[in-house]
Image 1: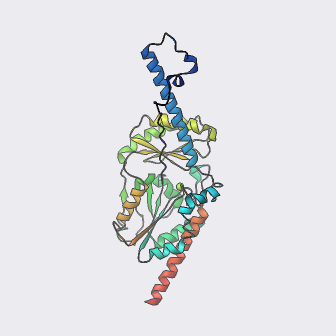
Image 2: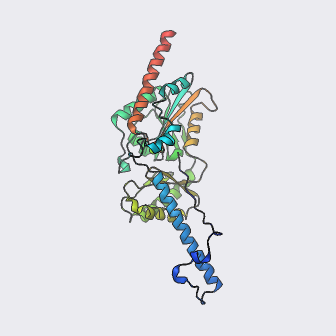
Image 3: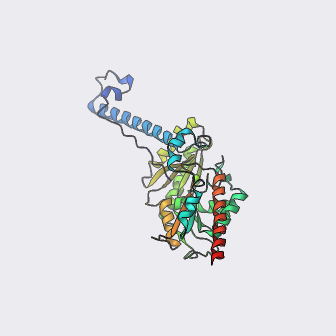
Length: 333
Ligand SMILES: [Mg+2]
């Protein structure tokens, strides 16, 4: 799930000349030519636009980065998101009933879903128990990890060869390295729709490392087809400064765009491709294009902030259900 960046538009009609000029420039000196005045206005407007945009960025960074405390279903949550999007655990029986006669395909986010959000993104390890739960699920259902991270990086965390991996927000997809029993699942899928952006991404990564090194706690990660700027360890007072540095780099690259996740700014190519398209691609690769006999389940954390414990519980219940269901069917036959 991505969050759209707010766009601030300055309403020129509702603002007078005096409010646009710095106090020191009032009253307007006779030495100002119309051109000077125009330049001054332009400069001031640009400054205000950047300031407004920065505020919007920081607001967006805040709303994309809920804390665990806020996410434990407060009254606010109950009145909005959770009521309309109930926990998959509480709807488990209904989901399973809907899956009868269909192939479940599991899509799992990594950070904050299979792993905790930790201060150092290089140390976002998943627990042994979670790995066992994912391994078991992959035995019964085609399973893919879909993440903003570099594919190799997330593989080094998950370490399971029977899964699909879609790294860099789905721009780097690879099928299981070991044999797979599903329809076309053993085709050695490899799909990288943004290959031409590799040199640009590398350049932006280096520029961002340089620009953000004065901001304590900021960490820039090269995810191959996109770049992440983590602000998990950045003091909230410095978020605006960080956003400004990222903006200044990004302004040089109109072919790249910015999206936000939890405690992370993501810079990626403006191609028509995202996690949703990656899911579609994987379903096609598995032989389920335009199929009615498939039930894709995606578990991520960006809005609901489900903690890893609940994800593990859901995966375990899914495996138990499958075992019981398979046993019952073989008894009837
Ligand atoms: Mg996540």
